[in-house]
Amino acid sequence: MSTATGARLVDFDDALTRYEPVIGLETHVELGTASKMFCGCATTFGAEPNTQTCPVCLGLPGSLPVANAAALEATIRIGLALGCRIATWSRFARKNYFYPDIPKGYQISQYDEPLCTAGHLDVEVDGETYRVEIERVHLEEDTGKNLHVGGSTGRIHGAEYSAVDFNRAGIPLVEIVTRPIPGAGAKAPEVARAYVTELREILLALGVSEVRMEQGNLRSDVNTSLAPIGSLEWGTRTETKNVNSLRAVERAVRHEIRRQAGVLDGGGRVLQETRHFHEDTGSTSPGRSKEEATDYRYFPEPDLVPVAPDAEWVEKLAAELPELPAARRARLQEEWGLSATEMAWIANAGAVDLVAGTVAAGASPADARKWWLGELARRANDAGVELAELPVTPRQVAELTALVAAGTVNDQLARQALDGVLAGEGDPARVVEARGLAVMGESDELVAAVEAAIAGAPDVVAKVQGGKVQALGALVGAVMKTTRGKADAATVKRMLEERVLGG
Amino acid sequence: MSTPSPKEAPGRQGSAGLGRQDVAHLAHLARLALTDEELDHFAGQLSAVLDAVAQVGKADVADVPPTTHAVPLTNVARPDVVEPSLPRDVVLAEAPAAEDGRFRVPQILGDEE
Ligand SMILES: [Zn+2]
Image (cartoon, rainbow over all chains, first blue to last red):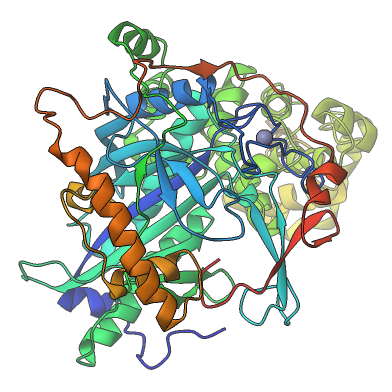
């Protein structure tokens, strides 16, 4: 795999002193319908190859497509959520090209009459709001999947032949295209990521797709161009494909800015081309050059009649939209009494649902936030997983906070209880019981530990009695050590004071 | 952005003589390998076909909205219900080559994944 051949990568901050980036995103979302876009085949992910195909999605002669009503509705709902104008008249078109994963020799897509146009999505990066204009939202069908056989890496280059699975062919695919986004400057990579993140949240809230990026439900192509600061014209853009994680969106823009700056610094010219993102190196490599412009010879799909959403239907769909993520965050921020920054941290950690679920299960917002953004975020980070993937539920976290609030466990014991929960030992109360983690009361055992600490450190006792009350901390520490953290520090301190200072 | 511009839209008006270059381009898009003689041959034939079709351009359609259907139907859709797919052995029976339940196709060269 080649990384930026020839041109050197310019330091990111350095590039931004001379160039202004303009980005744009084309995002494909596989809808979560039960059946395909134009036929009744199932859309189950991971099925045996070519077991979900029929004459329509295989493009056999004489077969006729019929549009999936749920997919039309989902597309309009996405458009409404993005503030788009919903077309009163819309058509499908054939996009003609030859490729083995396109069985008909064309993809049914939309061309000059998409379902939704002219929307916007506001995203926030470091306290600043960027408005991303949405150019269009249209509906099309997904392609099959090629498996490249031979060669060394399963990549298309060097492959001896390919094997095609058409299960994915014909799954409804919504394409969401932004207008060019200028003015983000050094924040361009983060704005790109924030846009895809927020779009994903909206799609989840709408329930139109599972949006699992690792399963390819959501795939972004990222356009990047650079122009000298102050230039009236934008530079030549590249389109980076295969950008299939939120982190990759940010890295792809960052890399293209550094690479293109290197090309321009060297007096070169950025080629208008498709580039491929490589997750392992964070770099891009050239694909097909767009300068031999692709000629798709679009024409209206004669086998499908126009879609003309009537106003009443669109109004009904608009009225039935769920609370959208931005509105929900604003509401929760108020309910939880947080600052905008605190709420942004929760959102950026992907913890809004988790914290909300924990609060709903009885925890205080402060405790819920503390656990998810503190101990649990640390564990997720150590394990290299997303917070939501940790094997602990919001209800269990709420139970943990309740045990702390009731004094059954202290913070340290609670963390040990969490170990047990994450290890699959059951709910927190059960782990506390099974592992014997409950805080010691003023038992004989604790009294003995306190007295042993006093007897073992006469010098410290003398200091405390001489007025250095803070020296008591050493004695508290000794007791906590002999009780292996199971004692309640406040109780221990009080018991020590009673004995040393004669309380 | 991939915004289509109307001027790219298909639909030639009037007489449309196809040159050799046009035919070569179309042949490339259709992945057809044509010899020089064939290019000349088809350029002549296709031009004749286009000229014949161009007769339609003589009709007065000033009051007729562009349409692709003879019937004024809109919003034909089916409910999102799964129906049985074809058995895989039937699907693959017509394939020139198959392997592990997939269609086996020749090397894909010089294009993108
Ligand atoms: Zn099918």
